[in-house]
Length: 308
Ligand code: NAP
Image (cartoon, rainbow, N blue to C red; front, side):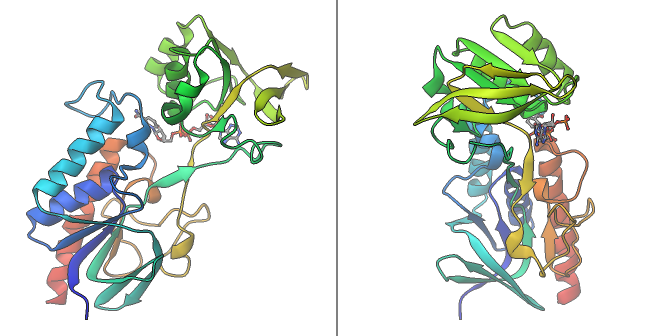
């Protein structure tokens, strides 16, 4: 029979890495499963992180690298794979990977983060990868001296627009309301940029193009007026959703798919804990994900003590 770990952690973002660090410090045998090597979660694609204490302005890659290096220094094990099933066999939990491998553990921490939401706009799917992107830091370089649109009004949309404005000729920010949700400091920066145009109360009805994007139809939701804008790229930054389909029927999920757990990371299934962006919570930040990772292991240790 395969080795049984004390804890298997699903996800290599800030919650997963913090859980790995705390688990190793608690002398637990620990395996982290990541979809890709050095997965890192959403932080990895963040151009600049300015609100994680101690690292003002650090780029997302470097911060992820620090998290990973720390967990590796403490000798957490890592494996690349995607969970397709989680089986609760009481004292043992079995994580089944897409390639069929089964990994056994006394407890599991679900820290699988969230994935980008689609706007559901006409043309979005057809043009994905042909001018439609969900990651400005990944794809922004393709749009040097071009005109792009960013859809959304949260932190990510504002950060993306600021990042793109460095290299693009013009950046439209298209937001469905007349007020941004994103941090005030990002709003101030955005409003100071000459090549950024904000279209308030506006939604994109259609993304157009033959082989590649060449325009969008933007509708003002208050007046109903539709504008045809020439753009070379569209960055969709309208938030994230948890990717928890494989957990349906295993742990309790809320209607939006988030894993139901309190700050202690305790789910409705003994021995299964959860933290980070996939958990029901109000504030999804790197620092709150890190906090979740620590809390999960605190609760997990108490659980393992009851099993002895
Ligand atoms: P978010 O905060 O949920 O913002 C999503 C934005 O997209 C909102 O402005 C929303 O409009 C808009 N939106 C949602 N659905 C839409 C649709 N179907 N069509 C058009 N617009 C739509 O998401 P996020 O910006 O991805 O950020 C996710 C979380 O990560 C947040 O908690 C954020 O604070 C955090 N974050 C933190 C940092 C940081 O601290 N440095 C950086 C990035 C992200 P409404 O405003 O009208 O709802």
